[in-house]
Structure formats: C-alpha cells, structure tokens
Image (tube, rainbow, N blue to C red):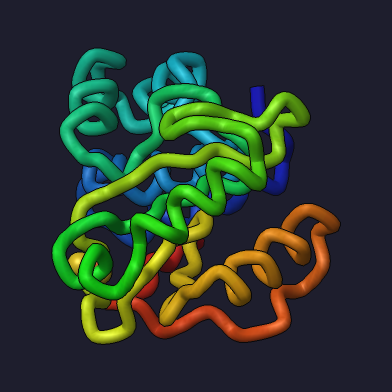
Length: 173
Ligand code: FES
C-alpha cells in the first residue's frame, strides 16, 4: 500500500518501542504527514502493522483533535479565536482570510490549496493572534502579515518571515 521509504520510516518508529502498540500515535502522524489526513485505509494498514484491531486505531485517531479525519487542503489554516487572540484582532484576520480565499470556516478552496478552521487556544497567547499552518505557528498576525503568508503559500514559496516557536514542536520520524 505504501512505498518502501514509508515502510522503512514506519519500521524505524516501531523499533523504538518495547511494545509495537506504543507506536500507534507516531504512525498516525506519519500517515497524516504523507496523506494530508488520516484515512481509514491507512488506519487499517497501521492496525495490521502493529497487530491491533482497526477499531482500536480509529479510536485513537478520533480521540485526539490533532489528527485530521477528513480530507483537507494542502495548507490547513487553524486560526485561534480564543480570548488573547480575540483581544488582539483575530476577528479581523478571520474576516480577511475568508474574503480573500472566498471560503467560510470549515471549507476548502476549490483548488484544494487551503482549508480554513478556527480553533481554541494554541498555547501561544503571548504572541497573539496566532494561526497554525500545518505544523508551523505564525504569530503576531495582522492583515499585512497574513497577506504575505498567503501570497507565499499560494505559490509554494518560502514565507517571508519565520514561523514562531509555538508551544512545542511535533517531531515525526
Ligand atoms: S488565545 Fe490564541 S494562542 Fe492562546
């Protein structure tokens, strides 16, 4: 189902754990990194690899909010709308993104490039407003920075300012 490189990375992850089932979460991350979201077929593959029931793996996927269970755009825009970000203007940022991309919350642009959702506190309140784009945090956002960010992502160019450190980094593989 997956290529040799993917299998190799999966085997390396599994080897780190005394019990194979311990690898279920990093393997779900690996799958999400590759597919863009956690597919049922991918869950079944992980279940087979770890000797688990597919329903167990699906239970893990659906328990944690960081796993995406439906198809989404190449860039998942998760804008925080909790108090600190709200006080620092996330509403304006949200409206601007919606108008610019022509989508509402929960929708994906017709070209499949962007999906926009709002989320609760991303744990980086001191640099509000904050938006997570895939695994990176972009902080201290205003309309100008959002435009620069979206301009770059629309053309798969490097963003002209670095992502912030965020509360933690998720490492896979
Ligand atoms: S309120 Fe937005 S990061 Fe905490």
